[in-house]
Amino acid sequence: MNVLIVYSHPSPTSLNAALKDTAVEVLEKQGHKVKVSDLYKMNFKPIADLDDFTAIKNSDNFSYISEQYHASQNRTFSKDILDEQEKLTWADLVIFQFPMWWTEAPAILKGWFDRVFAYGFAYGPGAYDQGNLRGKKAMLSFTTGGKDLRNFGKNHLKGELSERLFNIQHEKLYFVGMDVIEPFVFTAGIDEQGKKELFKQFEERLIHIESAPVIPFRPVSDYENGKLKETTYS
Ligand SMILES: Cc1cc2nc3c(=O)[nH]c(=O)nc-3n(C[C@H](O)[C@H](O)[C@H](O)COP(=O)(O)OP(=O)(O)OC[C@H]3O[C@@H](n4cnc5c(N)ncnc54)[C@H](O)[C@@H]3O)c2cc1C
Image (cartoon, rainbow, N blue to C red):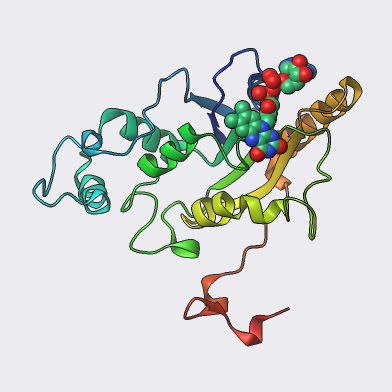
């Protein structure tokens, strides 16, 4: 498989850097081809603006989404966006490696989605099971601050982890048509023995990545007017 790792951490000596390096090593050993987008090292611009296009369709009444569509039709994105889109086109699997910050991904990764998952390229006119990145897989691999996940769950302090991740896993990755593999969560506050065990589990996940379980998001045909059809409740 061709694997793209989109890595978002400012420190090359961090736990996230070690997880990214582990992923590269294990995946290459398995015979996969790996590319890394190291967003901080690339000084990736996270802000979506007019500079994202080399030709503007309507500068008098600038609409970012309309310009994205125009740039998708004409390949008139800025080079940094085109480079990332080329890597995405190449990839069969995209792994996102990042620390959980304020219960989300770091802002630099949000900017990557805003600019790279462009209308006309990643989705549109269809979305969800009609998105343009159908056939590709994606997986979140992220670290949290605590020693375990006790604060996550139904009626727990932070609610269900899957609900916290819905915004990325469903509303971005599944939206553009990707199959989303169950996330790998590394609790950074765990003791040394626990960290060793989690690294081992991470390596196992990567070795068997091609058969890793995918989240069973519902097809859009299960919904009517944006709401789950009564016949599909379970
Ligand atoms: C702005 C901000 C918001 C945050 N919001 C949240 C939040 O909403 N929810 C939440 O849970 N947490 C939150 N945190 C905490 C954050 O998730 C953790 O600090 C982060 O996940 C740790 O990852 P890291 O790569 O930065 O770890 P590091 O700080 O690099 O390392 C964490 C631990 O792992 C050790 N370590 C590093 N490398 C290795 C290695 N190779 N092998 C073994 N051990 C190693 C380090 O010594 C350290 O003990 C937030 C932090 C920030 C800065």
